[in-house]
Amino acid sequence: MTFVEQGYFGGLLFLLFSFLILIKGESIYHQSPTEERKRIVMIAMLCLIIIDALLLINDLIETDKVGPFYFISIVILVNTDLANQREVKLKKLDT
Image (spheres, rainbow, N blue to C red):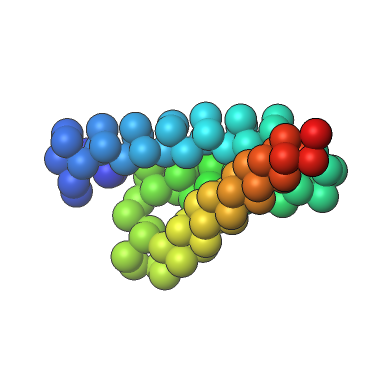
């Protein structure tokens, strides 16, 4: 349905964006030092997978107000990645 509403370029851009987020989310999951952060990353990624699956069927971002949950999940991944990088940098400075 995404290709019908957005065209080939929009559909391919959506798929590329989705795959890049999921691949980066997987690397963030493996870099997370604590179980709590790993769970947070997994929750955000599962939310993204569910929304992506539904977006392929229907355009939910604008119609059912799912957009904030989609982007909040991405923000959670970005903040977790920044926190992981900050911890690695602090550990390097301590040694």
